[in-house]
Length: 92
Image (cartoon, rainbow, N blue to C red):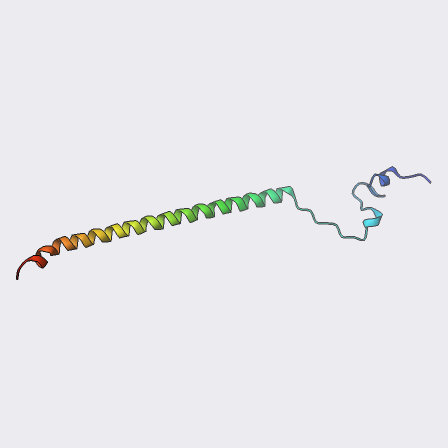
């Protein structure tokens, strides 16, 4: 009885693409392409970067607008106080 050298190397009886006889009943494990992994990782990284930039920009814009509104309100209050000092301090 000759020994099939391909079968002894783990190729199975029908060649390199065939399943070995002992694993014929098992389900094959699904493989994920390296292209799919790299594309998904790149897309996720870009999306997270964009979300981070948008978050920081929105926070800085909100803080700047709040500071400008406070400054404007203080200037209006000072101007109103300056204009009304004569009316409040004068004798009727």
